[in-house]
Image 1: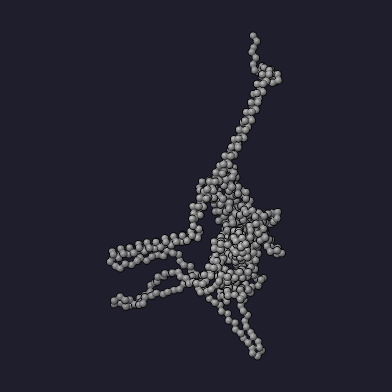
Image 2: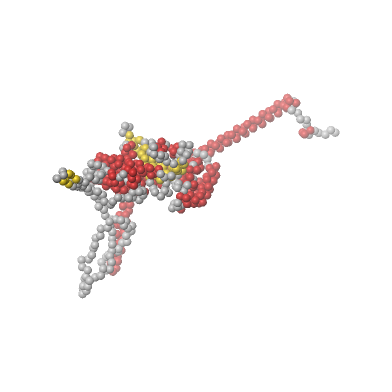
Length: 559
């Protein structure tokens, strides 16, 4: 019997060799397979598109949640202000006064009750127990006016005694008092001497004044400038304060005094600029101020640019420049120095990541300049994520930055070379670990969210952020200069706006010198008074002797 054929024993026959029905069935099956493959490919593409949409949606949700949390924090946290800053400050001061008053009354009542109870128990007159002072001692430099209080009789008044008593000690109590500012007048009397025989007249030349022919001596000029630019008192308020002492100083007179003094201080400001540019490491930042635009009947935004010597420099100094805008041309012009004097600055510029500074340190234009980034700005991006306490990445990043700053605090008092060596040994491994961790976390974070933005900012500016590791003279952040800009922020509240570009430049001149004097430990009024007194007779070749870091008072008395 012939065996049955299996499927493997069938001859290989192409579709063309099949009957028509079989060939049609094969073709139909092949088409179905192709359709299924196409459907699977389309489904995979659809799933991938859905995954991308989900990731984008989650990033948007995270971003919106973050913005809502920040708005809530602004509304109910640091800006929980239905009242403005001035009103809030007054409220806090009133609250402190009320609390102190109530505590004082309560303490006095408790003492009276305790004394009355003790007196009732002992049947003796009530005497309040001595109170221990809770305040800090007054500074030693304050003038003390002593008032001696001794008994009228120092002989024992006990019956049958009458012997002289011995002084065994004393109790001292101090109270703070004040005498309002005293105005006084310098009366210069120039004697005239003549020889009747030779017909010769002799008289001492008049003392040179910073404002010739005016009413103000250098002390009053300094007081006006300090009141305006340190205490932030507008001229109309100074006029009122002066009037309480019976001195009439119209605001136009005060403005004229400040204008002439600002012009007289301009050469010293130029010398300060040369001193600042002599530092190889500079901090730079800018802050907006309102500038009056009379033609438009409103204000427009201008900027004060600030430059300071390195935080680690042994001799501090800061200088301000008032500019009409925020473009790169302003720091470029400042760092170029005065034309024809070869003062073009070179070195390391520490800033935030504002794009204008990229042009300032462009290696194609300025090969001798490099940029360093502020680490505090990078850290703040992660701190923003931690306010709600839900960002694990933010909390871990802040913890890592804290370790880096802990190392930096220990190196503050070292020399630049020692600081660089210790940074390489202690801080660089922490930075390397931070970079690896951020790169790993970035792969797990969706694009578009605040976490991705914070990580991208740090990794994108990594070279500039770690510039301080290779140069011990470079600070880790720009907080040093941000502290020097605070007086402008305080002044904005009082001035409201700057009246003109000339007024802004004048304010920059005075505040540069005053703030640099404060950085060098000088009293601003004493410094300005002495400088304004000496300027009229100071040689231009020795103008640097009046800079804050070199200034020594010429005398203790004022002419």
